[in-house]
Image (cartoon, rainbow, N blue to C red):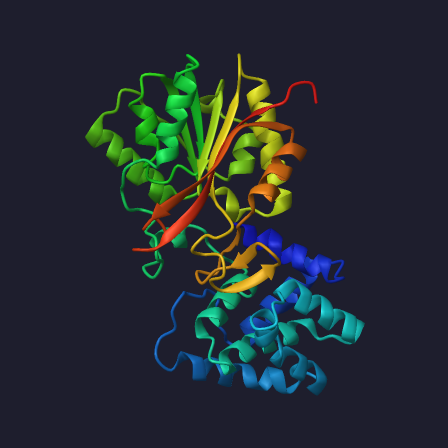
Length: 364
């Protein structure tokens, strides 16, 4: 499940709404009644902005004038004034209490973004807040994204860094990759002499089908086992293919999860590794503070969670924030490095990644 679902719910809870599901159901009904799109892309066709504002107008006319005025300030608040959507919603709740027409206010924020000429931000906001039936697999087919998920490429350098580090220790590795995609990093592991087994997990069946097709063509020494599913659900009930894994690996996937989901994933990874024979290792690459995508779109929570222009919310942690989270989760860091990638996320632009290798602390 994408972080949008849980971050949207947490946003409402933090703003004082004890039943976020009821609020979201009401918002979904409003979207349907107005004839708004059930799914939102990352680019609007010509004339769509005017048509969208016209569709919103009858609903916004029923919103109290003082709430409409407050919503009009949100675009400036989250950009020029260094605010964020969570604080804007909390302030609206504090100002109007139970009288706040929350579905109407959320739609008024969309109208305010469009009125301010911030079309890309408006579409990102709509995809995050209003696209309640979001299909994660659509990201793999989205033609407007800067980075193509299904593009084949060489393994990321973290793979070679891990094989060097763990190979020097004489470790025999059984890899479980979370978010394997089409197998780009996997093929680094599959051809390594230190790797005895590999299982990959991804939510996209299209990506897994492409992975299998590559295996048929390239015939790597290690035959991968591939599992379709959500990370946490697979870790909760590890399939036979993941049994005995002593290296859990993920690249550019964990920033999609909310803090609560990450805590659960970390706990499940730790449980899996402590059950393996010998040492267990958790390794991942995650975009960090200073990433090309930090600052693109709308700040959801300051300082480091953003709703990017593809509508997905992502966490861009500082080195210190990431280290604190791993410590709380019961992991000891073996290395933690910052690496730059050129052209990984956007052509010709630099991106910043944390490279982390850690192990579960025993006896906690």
